[in-house]
Amino acid sequence: MNSKIGYLIAIALLLTAPLVIYPVFLMKLLCFALFASAFNLILGYGGLLSFGHAAFFGGAAYVTGHALKVWGLPTELGILTGTAAAGILGLLIGMIAIRRQGIYFAMITLAMAQMVYFLFISAPFTGGENGLQGVPRGTALGIVDLQNDMNMYYFVLVIFGLAYFLISRTVNSPFGQVLSAIRDNEARATSLGYDVDKYKLLAFVLSSTLAGLAGSTKTVVFQLASLTDAHWHMSGEVVLMTLLGGLGTIVGPSVGAGIIIALQNYLASGPLAAWVPVVLGLIFVACVLAFRRGVVGELREFLKKSF
Image 1 (cartoon, rainbow, N blue to C red):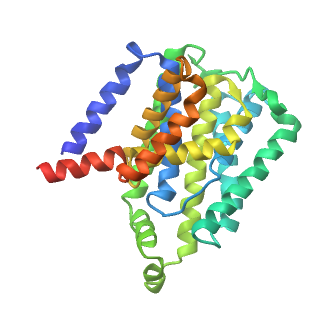
Image 2: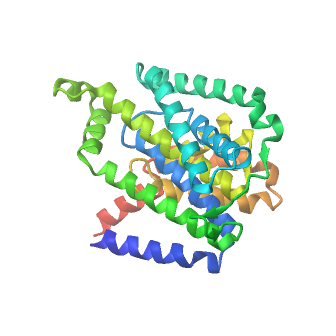
Image 3: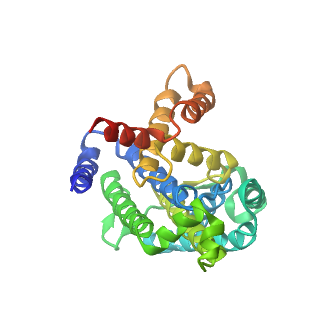
């Protein structure tokens, strides 16, 4: 009951937020909240630490940008094309990476992501270091003008809401329970007859697809796809967002994304602009040392002890 009330309050706040907060900032926050939630699906619930999720985020961004700018596809179809491309890329990388565990899995995903990054540098359709600029926002359903920031915000909010619902349903489904069992004790899950590699691969593909959806949406919002989207720094940022908000919680990654994006925007316009990576690094160290459950996890533990 309390969770339903919390969700209703969150929905009300999200619907009214653009009336008091710059819509473009809110759209950026929603895109990265979705990215972090997608990443949490494999790390928080599957126990798979990927250092290559920027490949799916950036890959979808480039494909969507090209589909909208060069092919002239409708906005919805362009986003779906980029999302599908991320899913296919996730399948190819996942089939290789899930053969290993722990640090070896992480290093394989990082290596594959760097290969994708260098491909984007040299590929003609990406625009190289200049990126894809001037990507048209188009219209939603052929009617709603997405060039208007308020219209665009609610379009992004619908995408985020649908993806968030899918993640929540997945985590609370039998598939999600098996995934958590594999995270906790893979050998026991195998002894019970579950095809561990199949579950890992499905989770990895779903996570990469949703990460691609976040990247595709971000491209439409900012009308730009750049190398920053596919750089390994982006993979590091999404790890930080997930850990800071609360690993293995539904709401945590969104909270972590909100904190990081707000800090980046606030610090970028102040005297600490050049020190943003240092500040984020200190936050990461503090998170690991002081509150390993993350903001949401620590708050939940405090409420349990208090009540």
